[in-house]
Length: 638
Image 1 (cartoon, rainbow, N blue to C red):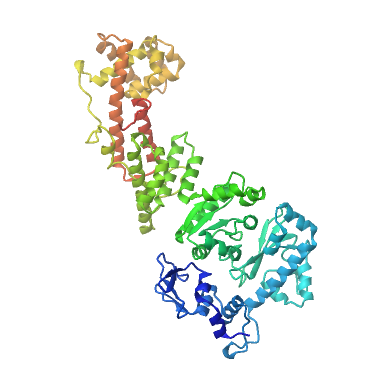
Image 2: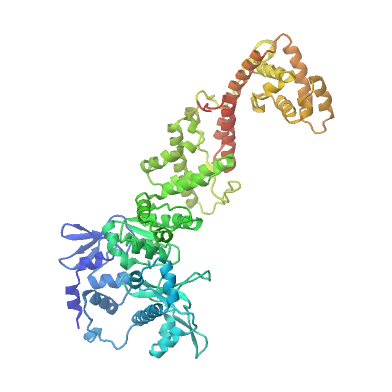
């Protein structure tokens, strides 16, 4: 029997605390991140000479008993017993203030779990069916033993009857989540017809169980309910078996399920662990941060696994951890991959794990509908949101290198697109800060598909002058050059193109070269639409157009169209409408319309204080028109 001082003498405080958190030597002391408050710079000191610890951040201090009490939320007696077990000693309970006649509830629950685990393991050895199931899942007998796997028979009260025969307290069994009361006299087992996975805490004590159904029965996994010793949000499956390898490898493999962890350990990846059928919590993240600085997520490749990856990444990064993501083949999980013996392939996947930001950007691009303007706009918005989560410009540079080609201004060159993405990400963060400072402000709708979110600020107006070759500095539509006969050069060019449309022999070849957006005058655009969309106009002479338009009930611009046609014959009577002349007119119109659209775009952007999806689509529409008018391969801002 050992007393307090003997246990303290045998407990190396550096070794004990180092089994809970990461420590590194500095001088005679050891330092690490304090487990009792959130910090990024180590202020937690362990002194092996005085056998004490102190955090200079939050002020907590004490000896090895104090640390275990606080870290594990234990009483002194429980902490002393834990440390005694680590040293191979037994606590002397009959020693002054430590004298006690009763075991605590936690001790009774742990004892009950230990008895139940032994019974489940014995039931597995007796069941050929359960053993065959695990064999088919490629679980080796030695793995079953090391993880203490068991079997709950297909019976309502097998465990309950066994505990009664051993005179175990059914009240404790109920508190442990092993049995439930049907009435005052009868009890039934919680786990029935399931493979049993004992769940251990960091001291390798069994604190609860997970049970997996053999087929498609629901729930597929059934866990122990919350108890004084079983809190899912704090426990990680496989942690006591993974701790040593995590320390030596410098990272942990975080997986989704029990079988994934078991398959990984069996194949040599003994730094694998998993949450208990629940989402990763801040408590999990804090616990992992005490063990290592890097987490590699190895979740399933399906949609649910991807969502879990992104959700977990955010929580882990908030805890100061570096997060990487393993990309498994579609339809695979660690268990299926390793069950096929693809250990080398799995190791390569780990070696090639990418950062969270890279993973998210790749997914966004992979899933985006880039065939439509709205799809590209949505993709760009999502890319900017992810880039905004990167804290520094230098880091962001790395990721922008992957995505700048998807920015609408990428045709202006890498430097322009990259700078825009940097500023867009900074503006996104600025909106988040503004939204937090004004919680009562109603959200602004950003259009279909986005829900109610803060709208984008104007991102281009201050930069448009620099990014365009010859934009009008006043942001006004440029004046056309006045020529002979009272028509500007551009209006005369427009009449020349109109002449090509009027001539039925050149009409089709001309229409193939232009779109309605090349025209300055709305009436001529309307006429272009009639000719291209209505077969009657396309095949008729000019003389018949007037008669047909007079019969149109809802035709806008009829009078204007008629006046332009009459004016055309007066103003262009001395101009030969040749193919070469029409081609020159098209080029004149293209150049003018490009400048005109640039000016309209700049004026539109200058007027926008907030940025919505609709605004984004309108700006992209301007850009598309400019590209089409300048011709394929040319930049709208060159």
